[in-house]
Length: 231
Image 1 (cartoon, rainbow, N blue to C red):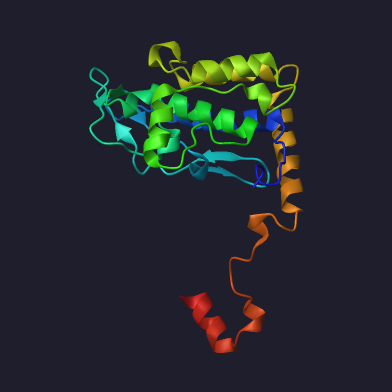
Image 2: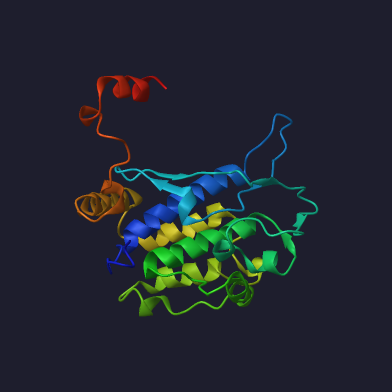
């Protein structure tokens, strides 16, 4: 919607969204089982469709439906592609081992796309998209988001390193450096900026969320109303 309407999302609002995603990833990646051992969970489908933002700017990472519990010593050798192609990491396309740094790359894509209002990896076909993922070339963020802080660009590029060993090694590390780029603003202030931005979107007549999702119960017959309510 923001890309179609050429609405620039405030940088601090984007950072607040990505920080919420990273907090969720850090929790999942660090989850410990009843035996006291870390579960080594990776999400494998971090994408805009799985990030929910409430009107009061609370951010939730959802849909761990294809999450994987890994053997920490071995990781996972990718035999089949899981998740949405646009949000995959290069190592998955090449059939290599994946670990939590796979999710770090996907979060980096969210950061890029939120700032730039365009897909990082486009293409007319799945093959085109996968080839772009494999190459992992990152266009200049400042081209799409004027006056973006250099610190944010640096963080985004490190998260999107093609080589997993050169990326952030944990969601927590990624989040710490991203929070540094907020200064002198605070994360709470960024949350207010995100909330205000969302409120502005809801005021737009053409914003998709304003479309009615349920029937007008006042306009239907009583028996129909009962069936709708009691199902």
